[in-house]
Length: 146
Image 1 (spheres, rainbow, N blue to C red):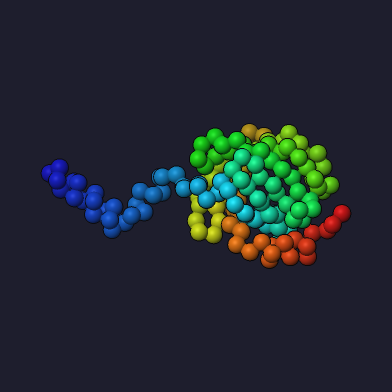
Image 2 (tube, rainbow, N blue to C red; image 1 turned 90 degrees about the vertical axis):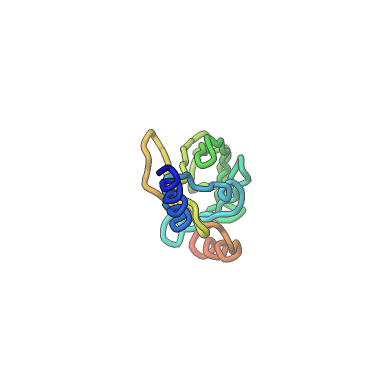
């Protein structure tokens, strides 16, 4: 009987490898370092450079940006704290914090939720940046250089 149970479990895992994946945490390795982007609103693109412990979010690449420290809570969760602001659009956000929890990762993007003021917000999406020049051009086209 025990052998039958083990055989069934092996067959399920071979035939349906994702049967248990829904309960396992995402592989967040790819989101710790690299270049990413998101569309803050239609035609309003933000580029993110992340190196593990810090990230820079560019409204207009290398012109208007903010720098944030990253404190990893676990492999898929971290605290962002604004340490520098070089963007008149943002005002003074230095010291502001938000908690991020990555909920899924795939080939093109990852999804996350943000906790601000004690409440979790809706799921949002950040894309893995494959063509920096293309997104920079979109930023130049749609962002106003104060």
